[in-house]
Image (tube, rainbow, N blue to C red; front, side, top):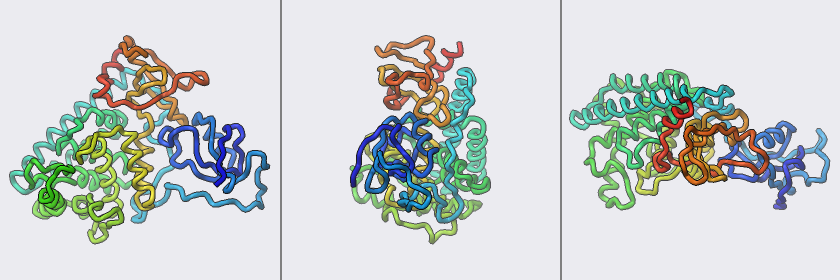
Length: 422
């Protein structure tokens, strides 16, 4: 292939885009290899702040070649991840995440939403812990309580989705069973809402996601996680937990086929990514959705014995792992879109050495959010925090370097927002 770098100003219709001047995860785009067919695609790249691109002249025009006429045969672009999934329940949306809003909420409002989300999550964890302990003791799951927890999660996501996603970053890296269950439930519902899953199926999905590891309550508590150091006998015992979970559900009754399908099939990778849950009555798409979220949270928290990853690194690994599996890649791509590059409330370090909290996301320019700088370049606290709109930064000015873990960074997001509001 004949690849060459050119400035965005030289990009023309008919050229084949093979790369951009930053990580794909730091742009609003899910793919960086496609034929430029319309001027609006070039405008979108410019609005994303991309200054230099890589083109492939074997698949498209040279920079000095005039744009193709309507009769010119075009090269086919690679298939986009935005496609309907096999079972037809989920539809990949090309819209921006719901969190990308032109409205800039006040710091006081953001702080209040964050505080409410923290309290709500603690309540869910307490209730789920009691639920799992009761199951451990009785071999039965309180289906009515599961429904009530899921309804509460769904209601909270309607009111404060961005804050609910943000407080996930405060969870323990060595997560408990109930914390993992609540996280998988929350993220599964967020992703399914973005994919326009009908509301009745949302409830079934939420129940299945919350209970996906319910079978682990029937195993010794020292093997509720699978680690590389786990002896073969314990690994074999761990792999029985989906079937043990199905047994608990069958004895408890009142759960639909989707819930059973999720509990039974959320670990298809023990038999390779092509494993299918078609033998169950539930939707294979819902099983895949929960499986992707389950793996994402395991990477974030180090559940499998690996070093815990940042959200960006976990999403990158998932994307690389699933890029050759067309039935799975749309879900991963949509998860990236939903979580966002620099989500509302996230803590980011800048090229200047400063640290800030994301207070608003700029539609169409997700990589240039509105920030509240809470630490200067010498790591000293900024009180009150300084507002900075990255879209107003001059060329060569401050840009985001990376997302930081709030716990490791030692920054209280709620406190920062209250300081701004004071």
